[in-house]
Image 1 (cartoon, one colour):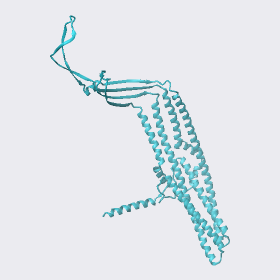
Image 2 (image 1 turned 45 degrees about the horizontal axis):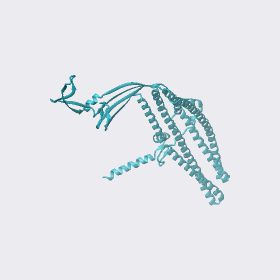
Image 3 (image 1 turned 60 degrees about the vertical axis):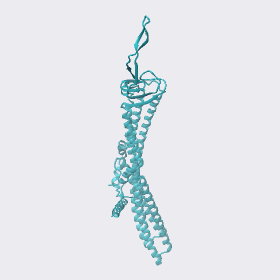
Image 4 (image 1 turned 120 degrees about the horizontal axis):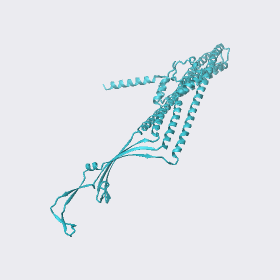
Length: 475
């Protein structure tokens, strides 16, 4: 009875593992996984959280502060008690309690500009994260296409090897029958060994491409990792090559790195306004409440008596005056009464006028102006780099398209030439060396076609990206 649930659990676990192992990852799946798992993107999110905390703190800075305190102490030896204003020579316990608050009424709008600057910083941190995510997506798309390229190249090489192995088998029979020299067989076997090495090398390159893609995604293991092989149509994408200026104009208003650079200029301008606020007087409103307790504060209670004694006082005639003598009892005043009686409140305005502060404010203003110029140059550089990137991607895509079209014609011609050579080789009208050269040329043309194809696809995906289209290989 106990084994049955365990067996069911293991079956579910194995089924789940098998399903994950057999999953074919699309380009969208790879990008989405990277967005969720990439540690550097998570670090960018922490920068956003930090900027959000700074913004909240700057908003809270508009509120009045409130601080309280309490002390409990004992005094030994002679001192003046602060509440009785009398000398005390015995051990005296004292307690003090206070609350104080202040609020800035005016400081040259420094706090307001700090809030505005922190709002802008939060926005450009979000855009920086988006820009970094876009870079990750482009890198993953590049490696995804690399995997597709090596996958197709592996199929081509395997097909070429299969054809050569068929020729090897046919020529072995001819050598055994005595109709063909053994040297021709050795030549074609050497060609088969070369093509087998190409298959192994292409497989290694495919494995490395899978590993690079998995590492970009932060995938723990490549075991069972396999991508989709979508049908890629090239003819429908040629419209993207019409006008690079339209692509640039769109990207200029929508790319996060440009938006971020513009916001950084604005942040620098707000930083200058904030620093200039230090030139103005600061007006603050403050108030406090305090009270305390002292063990030296006592109340005297008179004890009555009927006894009269001669006083030191005398009349003008010298007659001594008798007066009653009283005894007194001294008790420390109660804690609650002292707290109530020692209550003290205050409220006031304070004005701080900056006159000379060792040129610090002026230096900060000059540095802020330099920061604005630096941010403006960064914006200009970002715009220039964007223009160059789009122009280069456009030129590369156009060149790749031309190269792909030319490679297609070359493949068609090479295939016809190889068919003709294969027919001649089969009937003995073509030697092994010429046959291998024709086959190598066909293999080379296939490789060039695949390279130009995926290079063109990537360049058009870059242009799609700058047009704000989703990164996908689906039709």
